[in-house]
Image 1 (cartoon, rainbow, N blue to C red):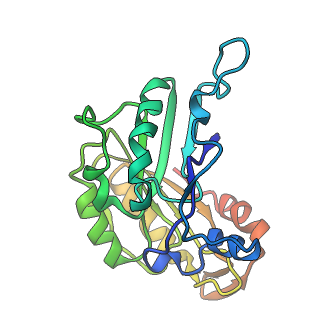
Image 2 (cartoon, rainbow, N blue to C red):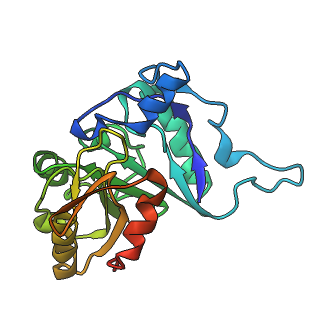
Length: 234
């Protein structure tokens, strides 16, 4: 999967952002994460080799990995990104957002019922934000929709929002001060997805992981492996 970060920097937006590893890493490097700026990779999808071929080959492009594609600070740059996304119709662009309520104000004039090569993933972390964001998300004109519940902070019900959702991803928080992830919450979402025939992926355990009533402290490097070993993806 290729990465494309046309800008860097973000602002904490909701409860899930409390221990954001982007902010934490920037602090160590003496960078101000709240300062949203264009990067040298802004034109990465359309950059070409000397032979005229695109540098990025066909496949999935993870868009705005370290920020939010719908963040207000990038409004002046986003239209140019849409033009590049249209040009690279051979690529599938995937982005996560906590700002789904801004979506209709951020799409190009020819969006209509959505671009075939854009996957939008709405991020949630608790019931309050699930109800708010997913009630908006379900009615938006998007051809490929996913939900990411990461970090999952409590037991939530999302079954009524799963129509036309292609995938639900669940994961815990990775930080020394991470809030705990209860495996029962993960299984609850999986059960909801199974009833609605929605694909499910348990992406990572949490640093503080509750399983069968026991609390485990897990190392960051083991979080994804241990989640995979649960063998509950569908």
